[in-house]
Image (cartoon, rainbow, N blue to C red; front, side, top):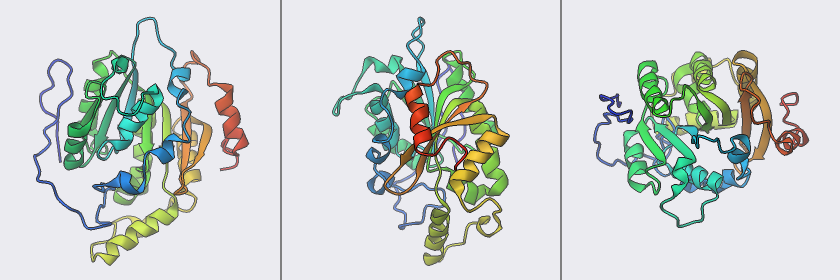
Length: 291
C-alpha cells in the first residue's frame, strides 16, 4: 500500500512500491482492481448518458480563470478518467495535449499501484490529470494527499466527485459502517457527486466468483444489513444523512447501473442547476421520491 512522501511545492506524490506486472485470475480482484476493466465496461456507455456541457453549465468560467477541480475515486487504469476529461471539454479523438488543463483538473486515485502506474504512463493529458495510489479508507493518507492537491488551488473542496462502480467494493470490504463512512467523506469533499452504484446482483456475483476460485469469501458479505435496492440505499444515505440532494438520474448503462447526480445542499446557488437537467431527472422518475 502506498503512503505519502514529503510534499514539496504543493505537488502530490506518493511512495507506491514498484511492482512487477501481474495477471489476476478472472474475478480475483477483491477490491474491484480488474486489470482490463474498460474492456467489459467501456467508457462510452457512461459518456452517452452525460451531457458534455454539464460542467461548463454548472461552473461558468470565473474572472480569475480558476479551473474546475474533480476527484475520481477508484480510477483503475485511467481509461474512464481520460474519457470523462475529453467528454466534458469536447476534445476530439486523437488529441494528446490541450490548453484546457487550465479549465479542468482531475485528481484520480486507486488502491492498486500497478493500475496507477499504467494510468500515469498512458495518460495523454499529464498536466491536467494527476494519478495517485490511495486507499481512500485510510483517513490519514487521504487527508494528506487530497489536501495537498486542493491547496495548490487555494481550495478546501472539489467541485465534483466521480464514484463509478466503487460503492460495492467499499461495502464488501468494509461493511455497512465502511460504506456509510465512505459516502460521508466523499460528500464532505465535493460540491457535486456523480455516483454509479452496483446493484445487489453484482454483490452476489462477486462473492460467487471468489468461491469458484477457492478464495475466502468477503468478510462482510453475509452480515450486511444494507442490501436489496442499492441505488435507493445510496440515495437515502447521501440525502438523509449527509446533506446531499439528488438532482437527477442520467439513465442506466447497458449493464443496468444508474448514474445519479447529487449536489451538496450547502452549495451556494451561484450557478443554478440547468432546468433541462432537473426536468430530465423528473421524467425518468428519479427525483428522489420514486427510487
